Length: 313
Image (cartoon, rainbow, N blue to C red; front, side, top):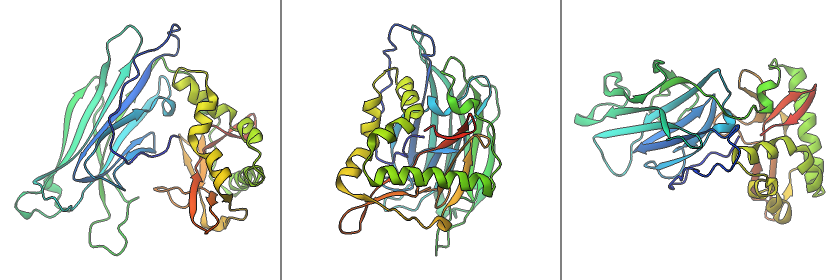
């Protein structure tokens, strides 16, 4: 899916849908934090985060391409109140999902917040300090509280357990993405082998700078990225990914250590990739400059379509 965003910026909702209203509904996620490490997860994919950079942000993005019509889609926060230079008595993380449709007012699908009361030197692992606030909701589905151990502080005394708050939402009126029609796969050595072969083919194309072939292999993803933004300009998305610049300024690593990479599956096993871990992912498609410094990593997603391994995001 789209790259994890960690910079602070203002998100502008797209209100111009064009003349054709079919498949023109869009869903946006707004993400706010105060002095917190937090991840916004959509159907198991990390969309926005404060794991790097500023820990107090107000940002957002379109999440339509990760959603599926008429089924439960999960939106969640993975939250930890971070110790920061600026002391505060409250630490928060908030998500708001908005549905936009042509000729209709925007609708807040759900809006909830997790917070931690840090007054009186309350320890961060005190469960009584946490609160989940339901600010607005049209789903009538409960917020499910839990913990996540995906995030681990190396060499630190902070607890490994992060608070999670998730809610199911049902969407309608969005395009039917190719990955939603892909069969669920078993996470096994056979799938891993097929996926490694797909990465090797991409590495060979990128090694010789064959961008035309890369664009053909990436056509499904590019077409759907353009559809998600209600345009037909696929070149705009291909140029924005960073592959063109990486090929011009660096060289791809031709021989990744495949043993370092784990097979990661999403969307009920229909989408998958190789990554170092589930947090950073870090694809085998890495580019380095002449000084040996990594300058770019392309992190695509794959699915099985017509029994072929296909790039879908």
